[in-house]
Image 1 (cartoon, rainbow, N blue to C red):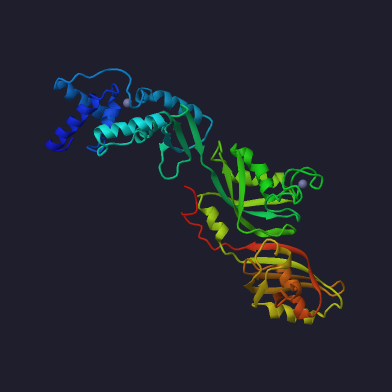
Image 2 (image 1 turned 45 degrees about the horizontal axis):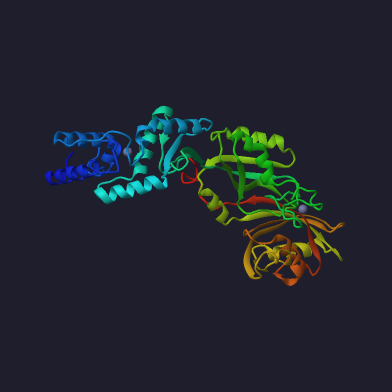
Length: 426
Ligand SMILES: [Zn+2]
Ligand SMILES: [Zn+2]
């Protein structure tokens, strides 16, 4: 100890006050903890022992028995350690953190103690309990206590005498390809019953039988032995659009997983085999939690392949080519499409078409295929149809005829965020 003589005398005086307190005996930990900040490199228990020795040497009589402050908590640390190990038994983890929910009684006792002896040198009870139980779990398991991003938080609940676990989610980044139309990205609740189940939805509560989220979940949740899985997409394609090419970036969040280290190449294979003709995922990587917000906020260019039907008075290929050239590189003023007005504010957005190419045109049927690279957020169906003048310019207006999107595929989704060490989970 490096404290000054004055401090030494002051500390001994306070310690004397504590052991003479009529509430009852005090354990070494609870005594030592009141002077925790005086010196480092020594446990509270040891510090308490030294203080008691010094008091005895001065003729102080110390009462024995259960500590009134912690109610014997520090004599029973091993009980808490066994409960924690039992709770952790089923889980895979590399690191953890211990936290304590202090009961009302102990919080009151601690306040009383600070009134008696002052709190200026003290450490809170829960800080010591967390550390001491943490050290023992480290010793038993070989895992590391981690303060920044623990995989599991072991909570010692002093109210209930039980150990609770807070198992943090696992996050996996990847891209999905959707080969089948009519599948939404996430579950859509039935419009009529809002999920309760009715005749319209065949008592599924859903508008569509399956979603990208549910298909991926079906293949991977069991592998992690998790409670649930949520898909966070970087934007979403229309339900009737396929997602092809390089696929769409997403992060899945596995909640309360018992396993955290599943072979991701195996998962990709499993998703592929279990969803033939529907879905595939590529480039799976373990990532940090923050990546969810980053991919959701990312501004990404999109490339679409659109099958368009030209109606009444099919145009000559030259006319079509001229209209496409006009739109190539154009800035589009797009008022919120009629079909999404019920859920989006009615305003005009400016979006750019970076590239527009005519890939194929069958004059006999009036069907053409166009590829469009543009800002994310440009509504393609309206860029083609014109949406009764709400989107300007549009293919329909330039051709002076009615045109309609028959089929829409997304063939690339750019992502303008760096995939560096701030992205991947270690
Ligand atoms: Zn105690
Ligand atoms: Zn329904």
